[in-house]
Length: 151
Figure 1: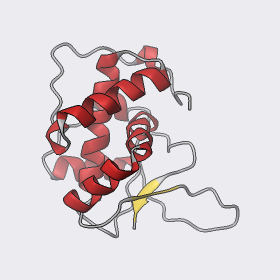
Figure 2 (figure 1 turned 60 degrees about the vertical axis):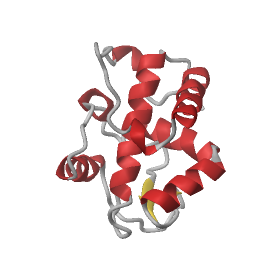
Figure 3 (figure 1 turned 180 degrees about the vertical axis):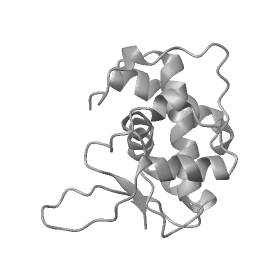
């Protein structure tokens, strides 16, 4: 996969406590975090932060079927990782959203895609009382293929 940004520039957060971990069971949390550590060759603490923000992002995607929110490249790592676990991901989507939250790359030449951005995702997350891990969202370029959540 490969990390789309230099994670060495993301500072460790002393005393980080995940705020979205409750959205999945502990065993799945550990599997996802450990997969990020392995696949992305990064510190466990950063992988936890990424997964936490990905879960928060997906929770806010679940609030509006017509929303066009985009994750930051780092948060997208968490989403990509979760999708690999198809059954738990589908179960999560059904439980949290009531529908499957699709990961829609916008990379077909000549096709007009919605223009969602990370700023709208951050604003929606804040509006829903979700904690934003600012350094993970600071690299606000779109995910590699301009991915967004929608149905």
